[in-house]
Image (cartoon, rainbow, N blue to C red; front, side):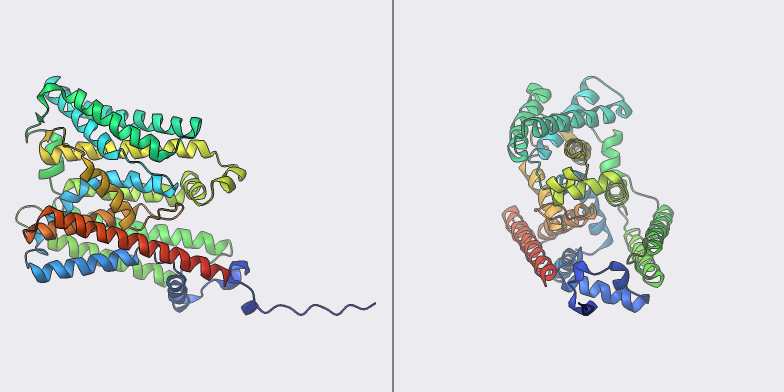
Length: 422
């Protein structure tokens, strides 16, 4: 019996997620732009909503008060963003796993207390205090990770208990004095508040960042292209690198006109940490494991990923970043007190990660979320301060922005799901 050959299914009738990626890769500059537009339509918005939101926020505050976009005010805004931004980098990591850490504010407060006691009362050198404080954060993260993987206690409960316990430990370390003044001659205070990058160095760093981004993107695209996978065109990569260079050079030149500062060393530290963690998340086996566990923990376990190690490593990094943020908080205030790392710091760090684009559902986000999110939050705080509005308004506005960010995340997630089933 002769069988009729099956009619080949046209490519257009095959679901996109089942088609061979090699047949779908964009060709040339136009194809790359078209692919980017299709991703946005499919719900993959990336950092677009927060960038648009930041532009709107800056435009509104500049209209209401012309001092908002002055070099001096923007310089202060960036310096004020550094401490909580560093803490938020750790929050991004735990959110990528679909978990949460509610104790980062208390860990930051404990770090400031240890700094104050060791510096003022025991006269330790600061080069020794900094690693000791970070080590304390690592120990706390190890405890969280152990409790999570050994007993299966939800991270919400573990870190809520940690919030209370570490806060009590902070008060114990501070002792009856309560507040310890660091003075403005200590290195940590100067680094957090008073030191700024020389103007010539800002341009060098801008060039390094643009060239580094272009080279990394080109190598990544070449590897994908050699493997027969989709990859952006060289023209598109060069255009993005050029845009980044122009933006950073113009921004640096504008900030350097400030008579009070420019680009603070503490903000540069935040950017460096974000770049390092972005590389770790996107270019290393550990980073791929984090996204895999956050996307589907059971599938990751069956794929051979050591899930427990991933959880422990992320909790350790989160607490370590919280400790580093606590050092910067103490430097900004010039003191360590029971109010350092209060609920305000805790919630702002979590809100920054979510507003910046990290999904609460796990498996999707970027280290740059912390940077974008904290700039949004600090812009709101700074702008409302210039308008002499009460802090209650700041909390309400920040809450609304946070809610909008979660709504956008939920809608884009629903859109991607529907697009994948189409």
